Length: 356
Image 1: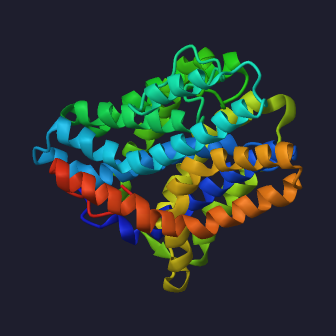
Image 2: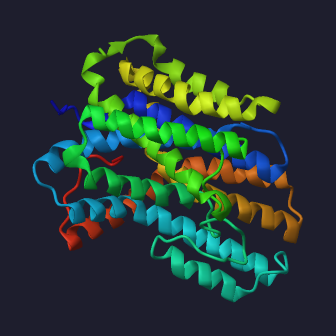
């Protein structure tokens, strides 16, 4: 039976999602400043995929079973992504264009930026970009949003056949392909470049359908109010800070295949006490905004350092703090109102949750 518990009560999952976004922010901040911060932070993306599978199954299973059409589902999911995705692309395009005009990117011309923008506006990866080999050169993290939307569509398309057994089989087959890909590439970070785009498919499929599977068997797990609600996010941060050296492929495979489901089910079990729910709601609420626009802002900070000579570390610190402080306003004044307008014009009902 499908749970009728609204997503907003699952503060432990919100907390885990928010901490995962902070880990990605720390990883890229360290890369910009030349410091090793959260060196395994890219694996937080796999946690995002698993959380997405759980949340989408929670938010849409009843509606799909009741006859929600595939087209309306896809439109609803695209609306969820669109405002912050476009904001990230716009900021990334601006940062790249300024970099071209001031001579920081000598092999790129303005037309290359507009070429990539043309694809990105339709939520499509850019083939043959002169900017980089990333699927989305103007804002590289968008690769995961593109594949997440694709796997969302797959979920809706096969929903009528998606029993627990079928879900487990899909997750298992994806897992085998994922582990094989990691063994070939040497780590679990890929999927964002054209050279390894094939690896991104089993990467998102495994974690997403793992999340769906965890949702389907959740009734076998009791929830509890204990201090352990802090354990999953702390364990996540500890794991993502590890540099396994020569054992990178093994570490990444174990994290994705073993630790991710443990974190998900542990977070689901651990109910957050009322006094900590504001923190969980805050971090969960800003997580998508932080993930969507952080890298263009960091690149702008890097460009300001090169052109104006401002201190890079202080500039990045300012950008990070400003992003964490302003993200709630961006969500409340830009993201949510625009989504409401789009849903109203397109006749798409809300899921009842700002996160789904």
